[in-house]
Amino acid sequence: MNEKFPNIINQDGEVISYGKIFSDELSAHIFDELSNKISWMNETVIMFGKAITTKRKVAFYANEGISYTYSKITKNALQWLPALEQVKLTIEQYTGQKYNACLLNYYHNGNEGMGWHADNEKEIISHSSIASVSIGANRKFSFKHKLSKEVISVILENGSLIEMKGELQQYWLHSLPKSLKVTAPRINLTFRQMHAL
Image (tube, rainbow, N blue to C red; front, side, top):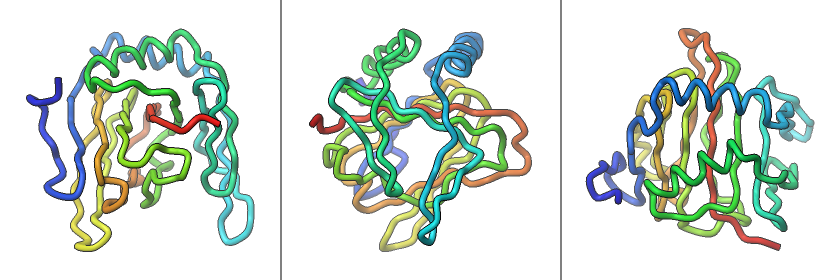
């Protein structure tokens, strides 16, 4: 289904931009559902050997038998909620892929972001599709090639979907830059294809 949607990366992988797939009205409903029903927890990351608790909140939902370790912290999956499964079914129709896990991030405002990284942990199936849904505030999202250092940025709109796949995680890093101009919250859902235990 993605032949008519652009690949915004010019080499070494694909980032397919589907644009807004949810209306503002539906996005507001999804945001409300996820805000109130997801079991949000503050993120804990290991930096310079110390455990740091971030303002950003996270949650991990997946099929039974899947766990996820990053930043030296292991997350055991929670069971899918109906609202989350509905979003998953919708994006699967766009990408033509099936996903068995979802990592959610809740950014309260533009003071919270994400530094340069790749989604290349061993639990993620290599070169598989990762579908990223944005609900809430519009945010800039950037990609940086590991070798050429080229940077490509896009604005992720409320209700939009991008799909990262192929060699992307091998050759590119991505980040969510902080922005003082952004005062509203954003929920990001990244649907993944992961190895089961």
